[in-house]
Amino acid sequence: MASLRPAPSRAASADPASAAATVVPVAANASPSPRAGLAEGLNASSAAPGQAQKTPQRRVRVARAGATDLAPAAPRKAAPADGASDALPPFPPDSLAASLWLAARAVAAVLEGRSLDVGLACLKAPPAAARPAAQDAAYGALRRFAWGDLILARLLSTPLKAIEVRALLLVALYRLETRPEAAHTVVNQAVVAAAELAGGAFRGLVNGVLRNYLRQRESLLAAAAADPEAASQHPRWWLEKLQRAYPREWQAIVAAGNTQPPMCLRVNRRLAGRDAYAAELAEAGIEARPVGVDGLLLAHPQAVESLPGFATGRVSVQDAGAQRAAQILDPAPGARVLDVCAAPGGKSAHLLERADLDLLALDIDAARLRRVDATLARLGLQAATRVADGSVPVRAGAAGSWWDGRPFDAILVDAPCSASGVVRRHPDAKWLRRIGDVRALLGVQAAILDAVWPLLRPGGKLLYATCSVFPEENGAQIDAFLHRHADAGRELEERLLPLAEHDGFYYALVRKTV
Ligand SMILES: C[S@@+](CC[C@H](N)C(=O)[O-])C[C@H]1O[C@@H](n2cnc3c(N)ncnc32)[C@H](O)[C@@H]1O
Image (cartoon, rainbow, N blue to C red):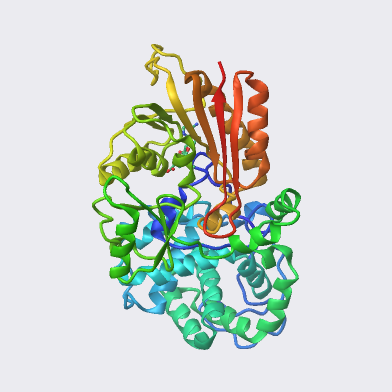
């Protein structure tokens, strides 16, 4: 039932570290694709837009359409990715109305098939005071997308074409559940926010839907609890994959995917000792404990600006699981290293913090690759960067070739993947992605592995990494690779389930034997 449009497949798995830097996540349910068919009226007897309906006489259950329906029937202006024209209407920045309005803008972008990262760009323009609550509401509503979708399908009777209004309702439903003591304030403030969306034509509908929700809450919650997607907050196809792959752990994986992720720091060992940095955090009143070799797990997420020395590169935000990559690949000082899917540069940076390397960072996405340059500049590190499609076999000396013919000692393939190990950071991913996207990603992953393998020197090592928990992207992908390449031998394999202090990752270290 519920799901959004497919996400762009390239940057499939956004970097967990960068996401953590911005905020928090959790998700909701369903099969391939957004729910559709929300109804525009409250019931068959719904009030006209602008009028509140007092008591619904009957409810008309609108079919929750499949995947493609999340897209709006009516074209609307896309929310600007740079936030430039996202001036906050005249609400106090720290008001509930402001956070609901902003969150609705961000969620609307996802309902239209864009990533939440893009949607959250609307938070750049408004005052900082407006951001935390808006961010929390946007993540929260998307974590519960299938739940909210089911509720709306029961409260509306005709397709709601105003996507931002639909998004506002999803956000307000989330807020009603997280602030039950302030239910009437939430409804009132949602109506205030609705006045600034779609020309204010849906204020009455918003008021009526939310009040009906409060009246019928018990039966609606029971209906949601009986729906596997709404109850689990995951698409059905996704759930089935987890159940098959993890007969014992799937429920724990699903539950973890619906929580807010922890925030983990990576201390730049070139500029700070971990213990000394932990002491600085303690002095600043920030509670943290060591994790892994360079990591500090914060008891509570913080704005990066509040971290001592963040701007000067003493620390970065990176999930503890992601920090395993540099440790496992562990190239020797002076090694020539290729990071073929490098953006936004978290793992490249960690490799360079650990040793002086001759590192080439490649990515197919020019905009994302610019973030590698920015990351390295902040950390005081250096690498060559190049925009290129790593899945295309490369020949030294050929026109446009990015390879100079010198073999690499080590290669990192942090492959584009389903991001199924990081849904708590990217709740939009499970709704935007479809099962067919995973199949397509398998082909890209295999092509990248095959294209870079000839560039590795005999005796060199390649680390294949994903932030996926789907076996076909992980062990099965590497099994097939070893089958295709007789000169490849698996040295190590590590599967991290997204259960506790780290996200879900897969690592396979492969050595070139001749
Ligand atoms: C999981 S992210 C990499 C995260 C990065 N290694 C880090 O630690 O910050 C995957 C990256 O692969 C890139 N990508 C996807 N397809 C690619 C291709 N064919 N060639 C090169 N890069 C590709 C995406 O643009 C994306 O930046």
